[in-house]
Image (cartoon, rainbow, N blue to C red; front, top):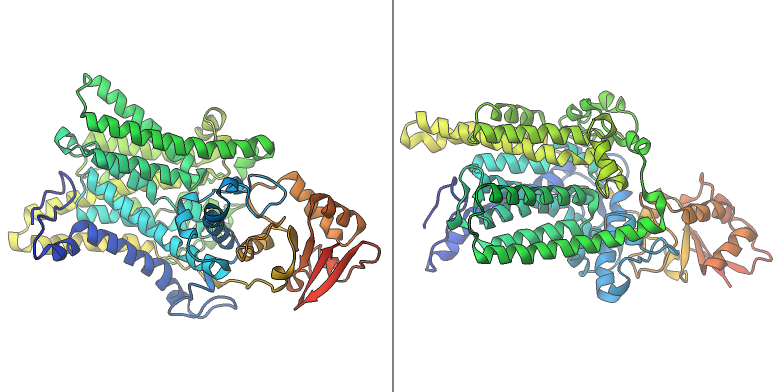
Amino acid sequence: MSVTTAEETGTQQTGAAGPGRLRRIARHEWTLACGGALALAVLMIWILPPMVLGVTSAGTIHAGFADPVHTIIGDSADPTGQAWLLAWDGHALLHNWAHLWDTNAFYPDRGGLAFNDSLLGYAPAGLIGTGPEAAVLRYNIVFVLAFALASLGAYALARQLGANLAGAAVAGAAFAYAPWRYGHEGHLNILSTGGIVLAFAMLARGHGWSLRRGYRPDRVRPGWAVAGWLVAAWQISLGFGVGLPFFYVLAAAVLVAAGGWLVTGRPRLPRRLVLADLAGGAAFAAVSGAMAYAYLRVRADHPETVRSLDYLAVFSPPPRGLVIAPHSSLPWGDWHETARAALGEVPPEKALLCGYVLYALAACGLFNSIWTVRQRVHLGAGLVLSVLLLLGTNGPLYPYLFEHLPGFDGGRTPGRLILWPTLLLGLLAAGFVTDLARRIRAVTLPGARSTAVKLVTVPLLLGVLAEGLPKMDHVTVPPAPAALATAPGPLVVLPFDDSNDLNIMLWSTGGFPTIANGASSVITPARQELRDLLQSFPSAPAVARLRELGIRSVVVVRQRVPGTPYQYALEGTVDGLGITRAQVGDDVVYTLD
């Protein structure tokens, strides 16, 4: 088997076909990396949390192994809404692709898919299976795969840049399992960052570029460049929550590369590489433009989607948030409870710990590294810049982007930019670990070098992973009420509020009836007006408004109504309203005649 050095390509060649080819493929670095990333994600995200939590409060699954069909990771709120998104994307592509953006939820509003990050890149998963149980299983699988792709992508990028196996593994673990991620256990759109690092790795490989060797024309691989652009386009298709900053970072990288090409005298580029960049870049631009058009249309219809700096200030983390872990961090969650409470409103968006072990390794990487001093300065400068940006209104830079870069005035949480400092910290740590391994090899006897390197570097990797252990619940998903299947659509389900609507959206995956319910960060005035009016249902004004909207039935979920403003709907009189009331199981269905 022919093997190249990690410094040159970070890959191994499988060699020619022969009797042992399957064995060589199975032992190939990237086969092991893919399998290892997947196995680690299953262990960290699916197997360990139930084992750690054991039998907890009512609603969580028993220790040992969680049921992937009837339980969902995190809680039964936001994750169920995102499970609906995955299901809708696949359903719309199969049955109604022309109205992809006009979902069955949020009726009568248009463009409901753009009220959230669309997760369109996951639509192929939505083509398989129907109903709420399939939606939950699909979500759980994709959730685990998102962590696997994040670790694999960061590993690939670090390897391409010149890190050794251990250094790249540290970068992958740090990027995928940083403690801050568990503050977003209900936000698959924010956790889905693997395409970012994988795209950069592929683009760097396609252009024959690494940090340690620079640009080498003999290493150019146009196919990898095209793949990088396509992965970047796929990442954008998931949404602009993390996609918008990625778009600008990638655009900046292209400008820097073009500037470097001009400064170095415009060396001749391979024709196939130029064509690959033109084709891949066009695909990336087309996907980005199509996504932007959908969101800009919603913005035009609903100007309230534009945020203010005062609004952003509520979500902007203070600098101390970088040393505070979210609740679902196993090592630090309980320890940091008091500090987290002191962060004020929405603490999950402000608890941004990347890991103390990672901080230490990255600090060492500023002084001892495989990267040059100049490269370390650039990485350090990027780290400082990205930290200042994520502070939002508590820092000097984000307000400038808010005022001058399109799209930033629609963002909600500056702290989500934490993925960029995490990546840079991981690369600094990878440089240090790679250099540490080199130094150990230099002072160790030839026969003991590999063992000596592992004795030193593996504990560092395990330290990063230990800080990344989660304690996420696997919560039983509430079953859909039988009344929902009997009610003609369009319909509305009461209670009608964000916390209940997330479950209702999931329930609607059993046939996708048109529903007025819907939860998102965008609450249109018309939806809020309807929510307020239906607190008096079945009153004459409420019924009249429902008829104006074409809503044919109202489902009242008995177990959820007590204590809400909608409890009158259970016993209110229907005399003279022209509607009928029927008991279906424990629930009530009103039909507008």
